[in-house]
Image (cartoon, one colour):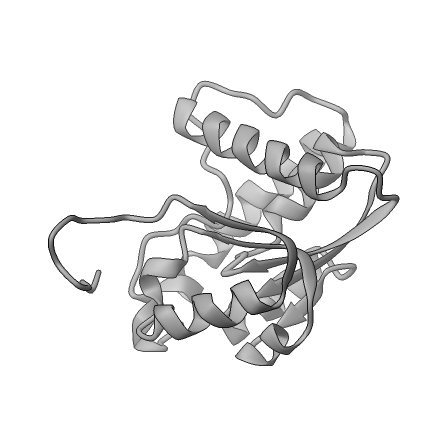
Length: 178
C-alpha cells in the first residue's frame, strides 16, 4: 500500500527534527508521487483502507467548510509536506484553497520547495489567524501542550475543526507517546 506522505512515525514532541529529517527523502518521493497522481487526475483511493477513510473524512469536512464558497482557508497543523493540500485540490476542484501548514523547520523548508503555494509556518503564531478549517491529522499526540494548542485552534476556526488519526485511551487524564 502506498503511504500517505506526511505520516512518519517519530518523536515530534522532543523538538528534534532528526528522525523526521532522516525520512524526508522517502516522504518527498511519496508526496511527489501523490502530486503527479493528482495532476494526472488519477484516483486517490488505493488498497490502504485506513488512508481511504482519512481521505473521505477530510473530503467530507472540506466540502462542508467550502459549501457555497469560492475559496476557503485551511490550516493543517503538522501537515508534513502538504499532501492534504493536493488531496483537497482533487476533491473540491472548484474551490480555491488558501492552504497553510505548520511544521518543524526542516520539514517546512522541504515543503516550500515541493509546494511553494502553501503558506508554511514553523511556530504557533499561525494560530493567531482565523481559518475556515483547522485540522490535526496524526499530529496532536506529538504536542506536549496539546490542550492549549487545541484550544487556540478552536478559537480561530470559523467553520470546522478536524481531528483525525488521534490515539486515545480511557480512564487516564493524559498520556505521552514517544
